[in-house]
Length: 103
Image (cartoon, rainbow, N blue to C red; front, side, top):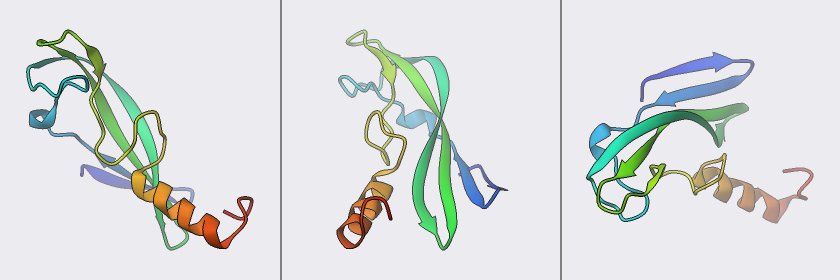
């Protein structure tokens, strides 16, 4: 956790990934070289009526063992998704009680 911002009824949490947790997405090796950063924003479960977003700088790393260059895995989100795993479960639970349009 770095800080929180409040904009237009939304809460945006800025988090930072620990450098010691950087691993290759291909083979899981810790022997990696940083090859850039990309900002990503994920939608999280709302708190009350406030929408929650998580911003994180996702590192691209090159693995020295397998040569793969990819973004590191984000533990709270599935690959190629713009929402957290908890938000996915929340939306699925709401869809059991409401129409998709209401969700």
